[in-house]
Image (tube, rainbow, N blue to C red; front, side):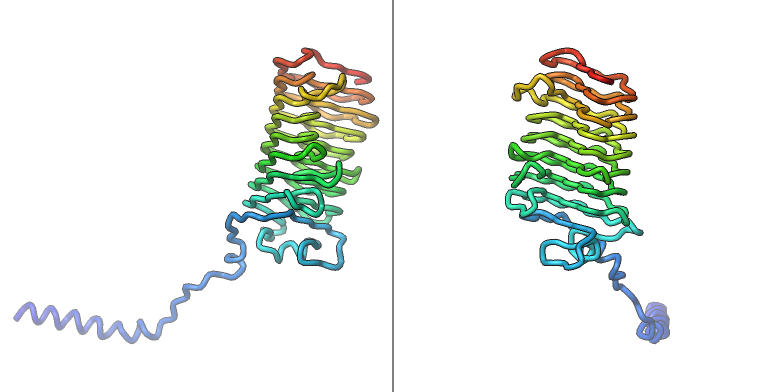
Length: 284
């Protein structure tokens, strides 16, 4: 009898709660913006092309408004992020795996991407290629296996400024590992650059007020017969007021080569097993 009383009590409690349960609305939906920002790693054939000045978008290229509508880019509190992609760039129409041009009005970040098998269509191709850009970060990407006219990471134009290139792995590159053609306030920090046909890190023609620090450059330019190749190279006019420190250069033709540059600060360069174990400095 006691057991039946207990059962009856339980049933009464459930009966009282049931109307509350059916009248309560449970929301298990995910906010659409949050859902759109959940990106899965994807493989893309070809490449990505963004030009901030473009007014007519196409299926394969456009401006930042177009870019954030694609599955590989999202807006994170005002920072446009491209991440977690594997790009097979063997058929890229731009000659680059990720190309961004004329971008100064937004912050952007390229991170955790892998770009492979780049076949550049001209000497301006690169795994990641920025032309006349600012306010960008290239972080923790891997770029490997480019043909002989392609760089790993490349910045072009005097209007490139406030760009950070950090913790990337650039390897098996047919041309230069990291190249800046002009630019101001460029930060090349803690990258690994190996097996490069020409220069490991190359500041060419007008790079100012920039920092090259804590990079590891190994096995660059040893197969290219030039008297001016080096693991780190500054060449041509107006490479001024740059800071170069705490870099390691192994098994390169030279540790560092500078020409027609001035007011640069260089210290703590670790050089080992270079073909010529010295720095060639002209007009430092």
